[in-house]
Structure formats: C-alpha cells, structure tokens
Length: 270
Image (cartoon, rainbow, N blue to C red; front, top):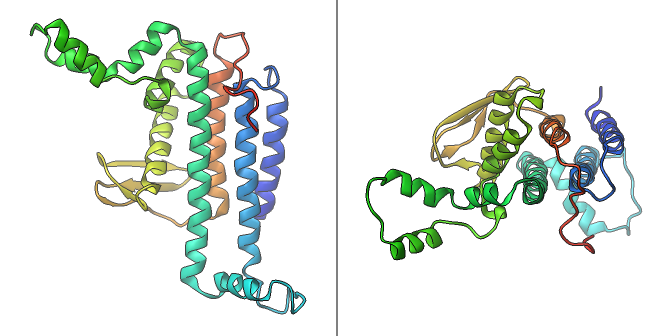
C-alpha cells in the first residue's frame, strides 16, 4: 500500500477505535486517542507536503506567477537539495516522536493521579529519598537531617516522576489481567523514551548502552554517540511506533479496575 494511504487509513482506524472505548466523554483514557489523532493527523499533513516537495519546481504543479512567488521558490529547495530534504524529513520525524511521547506521558500522569492511592503516589515521589535511606540502613539519621534529605530528594508532583515508574505502578494494578507481553512492552517503553530523549540532544544518546529492534529496524544507543539504526525507514515507520504505543496504552487503561471518570485537568482547555 502507498505510504500516505497507509497512514490515512490508519488514522481512520484510530478514530473508530477511540469511539468504541467504554469511557465517558472527556475521560483521559479516551482523550488520549483524540490527542494522539491530532498529533498523527498533523504528521500526515506534513508527510503529504513532504511528498509534494518532489514535484514543486517541475511542470507537474503550476502556480500563478504572483502566488507566493518568493516563498514557493524557497520551498522548492527542499526537493532540489539532499541536505534540505534530509533536514525536513528529520524535522517531521522528530516532531511526531516527541509529540506522541508527550501525549502518552501527560495522559499517564493524569490517570496515575486518580488511579493510584495516596501511599502509592507518595512512594513514587519519595523514591530517591527511600533509595538513600536503604543504602545507608543501619546508620541512624537525626530527624532534622532526615527531613532535609526528604525535602531535597523528593518531588512535589507526579509529573516530575519518571514515566516508566508510573507505568510500572499501573502495570502492577492491572496484574494478570494484562494480556500483552509485559516484558516486551516495558522494553518498548524504555526504547521509546530513550529515542525521544536523544532527540533533545540532536540524536546524541547519553546513558547506558542499549539496543532495541522493532519491525526489522535495529537501533543502537551508545553513550555519547549518535543513535544509529541498521536500515533506513520510510514515513510509515514512526506512525507504526505511535500505534504500538497506543496499543500498550489501550491494554493498560482498559484493564485497570477503575470505574470513575478521569477528567481532563483543566475544564476549559482546548
């Protein structure tokens, strides 16, 4: 199937899938699908324009001479120069990965605030402090010093807690009801997070060496080096990454035993 048509049909399926979910309107478990659709639909627009740049400046597409003349001249450079073509391709690929992960993080955080009880949330916010206490167990810490450590090594809000740790708490809530391969899905989330983070440093990765393969593409993450993959992929690949993330989110949130509505945090948000 032609790549743009593949994405277009995938968007239609995504919209239909969201409409079939058993959640109230504006529930965050449903909002995720709308937010993701918005990101991927904009990616579809960008990918369509990207394909169009191949024909701009040729006799296949004609414009009135006075129609945005100078601007169209600049746009035709995308298809004419390899470096500009690669730059624009990287830009839309980077955008869809960063925005897709941001939607996932946002929705998981809001869901965690409602689904996790107070003690579970506190444990997440105090993880660094608890690790310090555990590493020096046997040593008596004065109450005043302990309070200072707790203040310094705790977070005020779940939005500042690692997304993978929040997911782990939710996975634990779901337990055996989770029907997908939990080990593989956790690995995928680790990959997606690392891939997204590398984009904030111009694809240079910082951290423990890591590799991951998905649909025939193998990624190598080497500390202080550019992220590499074994084969070049087309415009449908990042769309498929987003769909895999969607499938994990759907399995996780539909299997949570939580019947109340999880509202969008700001009522008048767009």
